[in-house]
Length: 264
Image 1: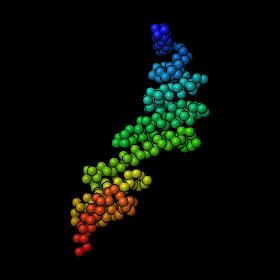
Image 2 (image 1 turned 45 degrees about the vertical axis):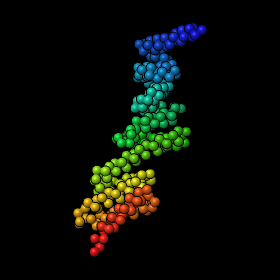
Image 3 (image 1 turned 60 degrees about the vertical axis):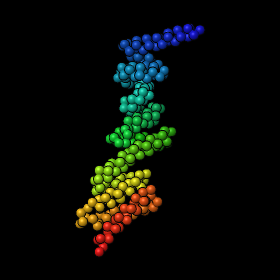
Image 4 (image 1 turned 180 degrees about the horizontal axis):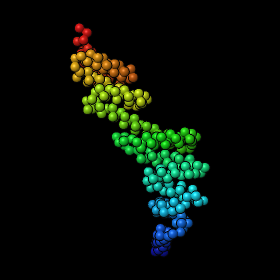
């Protein structure tokens, strides 16, 4: 019995492979479409894609075109070829605006761009593009069943951009460009007023202002010490029990000590 089952499996497998190979070489467009659809339904997306690539240009305007281009986009998506999938979903959405798959295609097209978003330390052009696409989807389909997922992705992408901006500002402090660091942290807090990095940003602004003051020429020291004191007050106003309070208090003591020389 096991031998019979194994033999049947081999026959079916050989028949499937033979059918696919025959379709690849065939000039019959409809035959290629039927086999491509069969490969897609079986989850053999790479094989389906090869056939879709061959027949897609010839199917534009035909009755089966809508289904073909939907499967084509999905096959790319399921094989994690997100750039090509995004392109195909967008093309589908513009070509078939009345399709029952329109909302899903619009969402998946936007989601594809989020899949292309790199780690926060790299250029975020694809992240910005994904945010634009997702926001467009949210505006177009405010009651979509995909809305919770879309909002979740947007939150993740915005955090990534926020983290990159914070790390960029922090880098100025790391390389001891304290003047640029203060400007960068001010811009960061202005651009991301609700950021989870605000406490750290305020501390590193204080740290930058403090170190700039200590390394200043006498003519600029008083002004810069007062700026550092203002930065300390901003941190304490935001969070009186800041995790940086001990370090900040040490800086304040030094600032006030150094300011005394200017009050004599």
